[in-house]
Image (cartoon, rainbow, N blue to C red; front, side, top):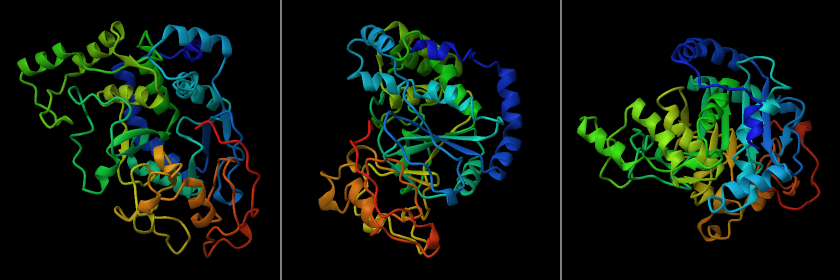
Length: 383
């Protein structure tokens, strides 16, 4: 699977290239807001429903699964003990897969690429989603969640703990890989970072202790680490050293969300990105309870996130929110029940493993746009 990265022929951009990209960012985001060319990608080997025509997305969602049996066996042997399964291994390649898949549909550098899991509900049309993305003013926006999972490094460099967020926005402090929005350049930068790691798809976990000690000796300010004691914030050069040193040790993990987070810890010192802490583009439902209060329905049938008074374009049923078994008593039904009984008929439900019912809520504008009352139930998706 490393050949998929090599085929992209990507290189770490020079400071001049980065500066030029930032200079063009305002123009690119403006064009993205005007464009309805929003391409949605699902890294999955399960069938996915196309978006309802009235939402204005590209004719067909792009699906695919970066899997080759021979490469998988080789890579599993190479990262033995660093991953739970072949599925986890294959998921780490979804970012390179996206770039390869998008090369056939991409017609402009500023077009918006959306990489989401299938355990989602899309509530916005293409134009609205593109406009919201442009408002962030960055080439990459990542959905947030309340905890640093799966591999926190609380004694190292935590660029997210120091964010000055409102009490409600803090629910989405940490990056979640289930909903990512960006330009081709934004996603390419992530893959650029991966290419610097000889042990990829085993991605570095910890900031070396000597780097922290050196940072303190040099008098650099201390960040706000998750353990409450703080840690010296490393310089760009020392963080670059960390990315190289970590690959020479056993301190790495194979998991797509961890790899994204490891890359973002260096992206903060390079290309811009933002975490969607207010759930404008995406809301990760893991950890939320009492949906009747936290996710009330608006008059148009869409669900809003009451704490931030926003209508998320994507609802992501991550973690235990998918099954609901642990949270049913706290007013958090399973994904299937929530979709069948409460999600608007105008929303896009990608997973074909979820049955659609005519009892779902119709907004006042649904009219003739109602879809079939039910869909065949198939085996649960990979996610």
